Structures are given as structure tokens and as C-alpha cells.
Image 1 (cartoon, protein in one colour):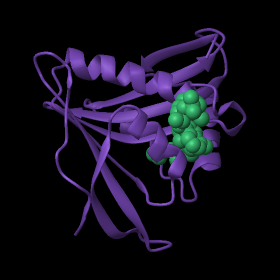
Image 2 (cartoon, rainbow, N blue to C red; image 1 turned 90 degrees about the vertical axis):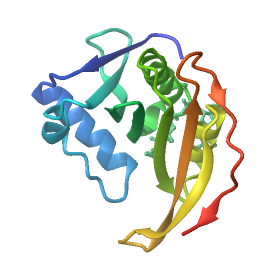
Image 3 (cartoon, helix red, strand yellow; image 1 turned 180 degrees about the horizontal axis):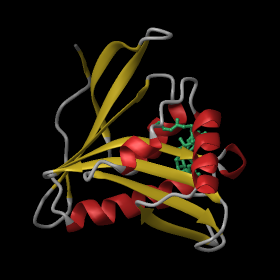
Length: 168
Ligand SMILES: CC(C)(COP(=O)(O)OP(=O)(O)OC[C@H]1O[C@@H](n2cnc3c(N)ncnc32)[C@H](O)[C@@H]1OP(=O)(O)O)[C@@H](O)C(=O)NCCC(=O)NCCS
């Protein structure tokens, strides 16, 4: 995507918070973003994607926890009008740069079983499904697919995942 500015932030003003809440509400059936709580966690990272420049409108965000040598991707969301333009891919690219710099060995996430768009996005980065959590999304009783990406701490190369998806 052209004209996209990405950065990590710990300080979000009211306008940014409103923009993030709007994207969250438009992206998830049961939005749960606790922005203030996340920004207070030393191990949380919030990436913002802005259109045009560092002060442009927020078009997407990624929230992750970076703990020891693992990364848990909590949320990736792009504003509906800006989808399929590479925003989420750019956010994940940035996350992986930081993950590799920190010698991360494992990235984890879960998503709704029905979320084909997100699954395609993550598979494009080499994530593989390794487990299913039955009824994890309690409101609808929808299953969660758990995905992971293993990295070699020294080289940053993807470590192939030999396991197949299993239910538990
Ligand atoms: C999933 C989501 C984050 C993708 O964001 P995006 O900015 O549109 O994604 P990108 O444009 O960077 O797409 C990158 C790749 O992901 C895949 N992808 C993205 N959206 C897709 C869709 N609707 N259908 C199929 N594949 C899709 C494609 O492989 C795409 O590459 P391509 O456009 O070259 O084919 C976005 O649809 C969204 O916000 N959904 C609601 C929130 C959500 O489900 N988040 C993920 C769970 S936490």
C-alpha cells in the first residue's frame, strides 16, 4: 500500500482512541479492546497504521503482547474502507521485524474458525493451525483456531511446523 505510516505508540490522544474504538467496533462482533489497560502493560505493543503521514487518519492497528521469547498477537484490524490494500500485511511485517530483533521463537494467535480473511492473512506469513478450541467464542459457541509461527532465534528463519491441527 502506498502512503502508509506505521509506528508503535504508548500515547494515544482522544481522537486516536475514538478512531481505534470505531475500527474495533466495525471489525468484531463483540469488541473487547481495552486501550487504556493495554497501554499500561509494559509488555503490550500497539502499532498504528496511518494513511499518508504520521498525523494521518488511523486505518488499522495491531496489538500484541511481547513476553520473554514469545509474541501473542491479540488483535489486527483494518478499517472496512481500507481493506485489501495491504494495511494488515504492513502491520504484521513490522511486528515480525521487532519479533526477530527480540529473538522471538514463537508467535501465537487465535481466530474464529469462520474468519477466512484473517486465516489467509496469517497463512501468508507462514502461520499454521495447530489446535482447535471448541466453543471458545462463547457468545455464538464458535470454535477458535489456534495458529503459531516458530522462528529460529539466531537466524529469524521460519521453523517448519510438522504438526497437524488437532481438537482439544
Ligand atoms: C483480516 C483483516 C485484518 C485483513 O486486513 P487487510 O488490511 O484488509 O489485509 P491486507 O490487505 O493486508 O491483506 C493481506 C492478505 O491477507 C489475505 N486477505 C485479507 N483479506 C482477505 C479476504 N477478505 N479474503 C481472503 N483473503 C484475504 C490475502 O492473502 C491478502 O493478500 P492479497 O490482498 O494480496 O490477496 C481485515 O479483514 C479485518 O480487519 N477484519 C476484521 C478483524 C479481524 O478479523 N481481524 C483478525 C482476527 S484478530
